[in-house]
Length: 587
Image (cartoon, rainbow, N blue to C red; front, side, top):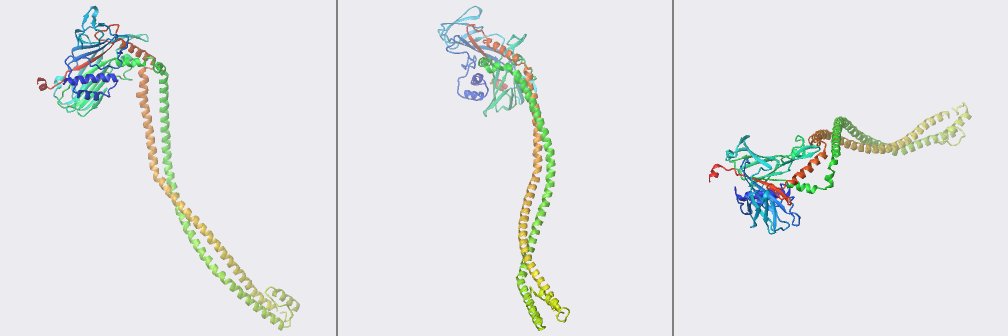
C-alpha cells in the first residue's frame, strides 16, 4: 500500500473523531490522498489533528499530554509493534518540564531538547519553554484488542490464503475492551469499562470490491474507491447494564462484498474515549440531563399513550368495518334508487308527451269553438227575425179575428195570449189563439234553446282557452319535471357507478387501519417496550452508570504514563498489514 494512503486514513479517522461523525470520511480521504502529501515513514508520528474534547488551551493552568499509540498489526490483528507518540504541551512555558513515561528508545522528533530519566519512570525535559514532541516503544498490554477474521463463500480462511481469490468475502473486526474499574453501583460492585469508541476505516478498490455492505457502519463511494467506516463500543453494553435483547450496542464491524482477485490495502482503526469525555463535559450541569431521573414517569406515560394509540387504532378499524358493511348496504340502496329514478324518468317523459298532446287538443278545441262563436250571432239574429215574423203574422190574425189585444212581442206574447184565451173561453176564437200560442211556445222553446246553446258555446270557448293555457303551464311543468328526472337519474347513475370505488376506498381504509394497528403494536413491542425494558424502568440507575463511566473515562488519560500535574488524553491507532497476491509480494 502506498504510504500516503496510511496517512490519509489516519488523519481522516482522527478528523472524524474530532467531528464526532462519519459523514466527512470519504471527502477527507480522497482530498488528502490526492493532495500530494509526503509519505509517512515506518515510525509514524502524531498527525497534529486535535481531537474533540482536547484539554489543550494556551491559557490553561496545567501542562497537558496528548498521546497517540500506534499499533502495527498483521492482517489478522496480531500485534507486531507498538509505537507511542507524545505531544507534551508546555502551556506554562516551563524551562524544566516534569513528565512520566514508560517508553523506551525515546526520540525527540521535532526539536533538540534533551531529557533526564529518574526513578518511577519520571522524566525531566530541558524544555526551555517549548512544547515537546517525542516517541518511543513500549511492551505493554493494550486496553483494547482487535482481531480481524476473513471468510470466503462462508468458509473461514486466513488472509494469506485469501489473497488473489474471488467470491463472496466477509471481513470482520472484533474488539475486546480490557480496561475497566470496579465501581459501586446501587450497593453492588460492577465492572465499568473505559468507554472507547472504535472507528475502523477501509479504502476498497472498486475494481476488486463490488456490492459492498457493512454492519455497524457507513459506506461512501467516489466512483474509484468505496470508503467504509465502522463504529463500535466494546464494553459499553455491560457498563450501562443494558439487556442485549432489548438494546444491542455494536461491538464489532463486518464488511461483506463480492470480490475479484482479493487484495486489501492497509486498514486503520482508531480507539478513543475523548468523545465520551467531551459529551460528558458538555452535559455536566445541563438541567435537561439533570432531569433524566424524572423520565421514569415519562416512560410510563409513553407506555400508556401507546396503549391508547393501539386502542384508538383498533376502534378505528372496527368503525371502518362497520362503514364497509354500511357501504355495501348503501350500494344496494343506490341500485334500488337508480331503478326508481329510471321509472320516474320514463313517467316524467310520458307526462310531458301527454301534456303536449292535451295542449294540442285543447288548442284545436278552442279554435273550433271560436268558429262556432263567430256563427252564434248569425244564428241568434236569424232566429230572432223568424220569431218577429211569426209574431207579426199572429198580430194580423188577431186583428182579422176582431180580437182586441196589445201588439205581440217576444217578451209579452205569452202573457197577452193567455189573457185573450181567458176572455174568449171555449169559443172558436179562444181555441189558432190557443193554437197560435202553442205554435209560438214551440218556436220560443227553440229560440231560447238556441240562445242557451250559443251562450254555452261562448263559455266553452272561454273554457277551452283557459284549458289551453293551463295545459301549457302543465306541459312546461312536465318538461321541467322530465328534465329534473333526467338529471336525477344521471346523478344516481353516477353515484351507482362510483359506489364500487367507494366500497374499494373504504376497504383500503379498513386494511390501512389494520396495518396501522399492527404497526403500532410492532412499534410498541420493538420500540417502546424495548426502550422500557432496556432501562429496566430504572433511569436513575442508568444515570449512576453514566456518571461512573464519565469518571472512569476521565481517569484514563494515558497509556505510557503521565505526570499527576498534567491533564491528558490518549487515542490508539491500529494499522493492519496489506493483503497482497504472492506475485506482488515478491516483486
